[in-house]
Length: 386
Image (cartoon, rainbow, N blue to C red; front, side, top):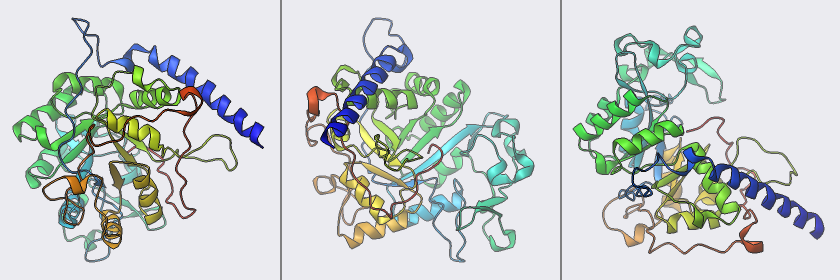
């Protein structure tokens, strides 16, 4: 009934207001670090390269000529994505015991290196002693051993270094996600970015707030994406109608397109496809990147319609085919010059001048905006962060 509907949204408003007040008064989530002169930190530069077709860990739903899936975060996966014509490679880095930046996502090695390495971490090994990649996901999602004799490319079974990816793809934009709280890792990655002169071809950050702070301090001239606490703060502030009160110093926000769980008939909405929120962020120079099982046409359509600047997909060839079939360019493509994944145009990010202004929120700006619906055939949400 209408009364039930209003009651649900009033409860949403109350919860959003409480969440915003808690996060807004949490000093670590307000600013990267206290300013010596009392000034707020400047926003990192806007992203200046195409990002719409975002290859998540190289695209592990893609297959090679033999019909075998590429292993995530490996050199063959990245080479395949570049050959497809993606806009950007997304990868994760951790620090080895001998201080090298290795490209690997998980907290421990067991999922991809086999059960014998459960509980072991990248940091437990010098780079030369890291185990080979020994498991991969089957088409049903379960783990299976990699068939070594079917992998003619030895790099299929090797954890690469960030340096190798930079050397292999000197002109391809890369998003770097630092997975551990380590000042040494921040220093190593920053040194590599400078060494390979990639300041204008990198988006970096960490969902870990202390690591995000360290990246900002190390090089505020590189576009930074929000940590998880900062993303929650921005979402809570928008839901409470207070986003204008929050200082934003990042250039992007990377969030799942929906929660990793859902409850049929629940009063809250599991989708995070919030067009008003995305428009507000774009108007303030923040590009919205969505991830989490964005691998089918229904989800491509829903996320794009919501105003996402980039879709982080495990299946970039499918996204590219969808774009071609619909004869659509990426957001902002018509207004930009140069190349890009979109047919004939660059997938650029709307600038503050191009994006619509912030939209007033209903009921004095206190109600969580309605999410964009997704077709029943939408992809499953990811179970862990990008």
